[in-house]
Length: 207
Image (cartoon, rainbow, N blue to C red; front, top):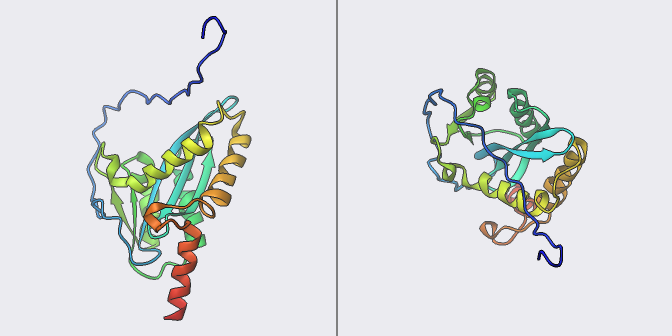
């Protein structure tokens, strides 16, 4: 490789900041890794992930998934990792759905999700809040799987996005045009999230 002046392609991984000394309070884990559902709007899961850009540094993608269809129903992208980001994602999901029964949303113990503002809004919407145990990504496995797919298929093939606007456009296209509409899932019987939702809604109308 030295003789040919060739170089391997590497991906710069995000390095977490040093752990906070603040003790994290454990909260109820209502799902307890039970991701099974019988219909839409029974169990949602939410999380954030980091996206690097050249001009704007780290940016933050916040999403909400319906566990029945694996469809991303709430979505927000920002330059700041603040409570407003996850609140905006929540409002996006609520706008896209009609909540009529018992609904649980599952998140980690991040400060945005444990904030008074976020939980007050969940109370107003009559949504119960479930939390992952500290340091246990398996408690939110479906969302972890989504982020892994997004990074592998959309983010890592690009060395680094030029800026926030470029990343926002690419992420929007991936989530809404590809992931929700075209990407099949083995857990869904090799159907897309949109196909499962259409079949579920059609079945409900027929009943």
